[in-house]
Amino acid sequence: MAINGTLSDIGFVSLLQFPNSSRKTGLLTVITMDGKAEFYYSKGELVHAKYGKKTGSDVLVDIVDWTEGQFTFEPGLEPEEITIKDDLHHILMWALKERDERKKDQDENGVTPVELDAELSQRLDELMKSASGIEYICVVTTLGQLLARSISDSTFMKKIEPFVESITCFVAKYPGKVTGKVFIEDIAVSIAISGLNDKQTVIIAAGPEMKLGRLAMAMGRISKDLTGV
Image 1 (cartoon, rainbow, N blue to C red):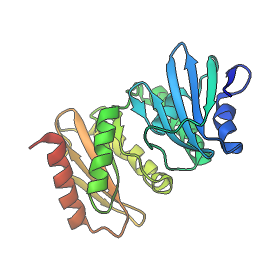
Image 2 (tube, rainbow, N blue to C red):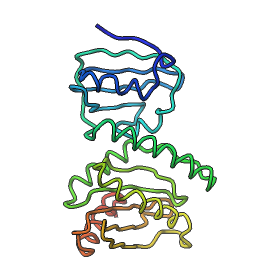
Image 3 (cartoon, rainbow, N blue to C red):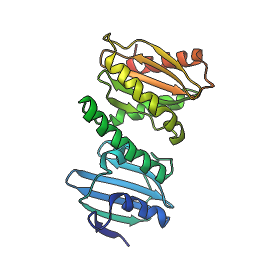
């Protein structure tokens, strides 16, 4: 039997946790004036989210502030694909933090965040899976705006986020038209940066055990795939 209600009756975060706490399998649909979002649960775990063309945990960042609208939970419906693998509570904490960071960047830098490119993000996921040792890939604009990124392990994301924040500032202030190749070797991560063209820069990251030589080769293959050159 379907469960219906409104967001004014229950907060959005509490709503997302309802199927989790009761270990339900099914589809939670939320409809507002901004659009429709779908969340699939399997035995209480959020395994798939969809909002327009966007899928995965990034959906939560866009809609975590929704306060008005209607929802329906239909038990027993299975997800069409798996786009979320992390624990729901970790995802919610990350989404709230990411939302705050985007607002902060917009206020401090006057740079409006762009909507993540779902198609390019999916392509980055595929590239990451095919590149041994690479745990994160993202593409940013020359203004330092995040354009697309792979879905990575939440533990690794906590390590890489401070670096990505600094790197996007570096890219935004880079004096040349195309960002040059830069390699960072840290005790926590190994990072490579390379301009794809005069509008986009790719960032890849791996664990500290990956030597810069292997990282450079991986960057070469990924850049070639993204640019076709």
